[in-house]
Figure 1 (tube, rainbow, N blue to C red):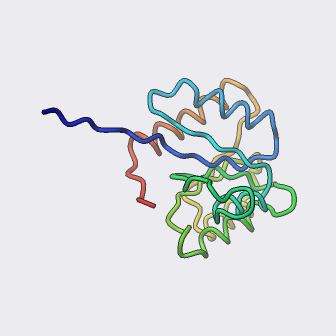
Figure 2: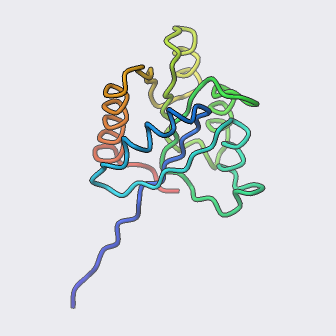
Length: 148
């Protein structure tokens, strides 16, 4: 009798209002050696609805990690980060800030709000792909993610 192990895909929530950056992230993750399910929402209100399984996201999966842009419509990434880390049910989800901002104030605020890391998006396509693949390699191959 053999034991078959099923490897569940890594569930990623990308909170990104720029369709081009969302597509680049999707492309960068497509070549992954591991199974990754990428869910994309375009603003902070949608992100919190997804995470709390509200409205149209009642059947949303619990993400293993959140890739969060800071400059979002309706509710910005700083507010989303504060809500995630202030919620008992969500606070253990690793949040990677992936943004264009290089402002020291944003970096400090993100870490003060318990971001797990802060990455500035490069403008070059190849560099962007390398950054996303580095996130994948570190967070999905090296780090042990918390259970839901």
